[in-house]
Image (cartoon, one colour):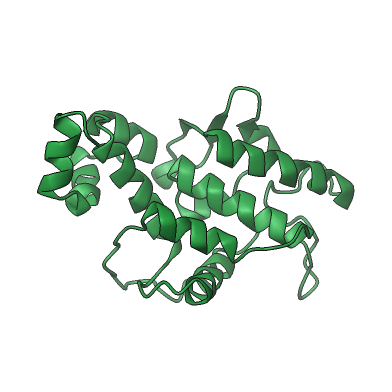
Length: 202
């Protein structure tokens, strides 16, 4: 059972600078570093839930078109999202490294690199790994906010909204059944942000 089951936290969002600082805490070119950078960028730019990111298989991503297929979204509802340049670049670097690990066809895209407790390398990464990782990265980056995986999803929704993307499109990107759920995500959008977006200044 997840440690945060039954708990509700204020979601908040990260600024562009904060995310860059967060990502900058993952240095080096080791398999773990390349995987973690690619995973965080994919989750953030794709607006993914933590379980969706950890559950991806290599066939779910098309690096040429930049399309990502979430096969098992919440409620079993699949959806397709787009990834931008930074996420695709990180994915390409990780994919090249991943090919050297000798994982079988059933391995996850962002699989566990070192097995524990008899697990197989390339098996599904547990969501608790990211729940522990992000606060450590945030502390190293000097970010005082409570940073957690779902914050990346909220941040992406906020960016899309302030960029003038229709709420109905954001709803599809996030895989929400209800438009009300999407609207709740966008409570972070301030009146100034709304005005700037409507006036083409966002």
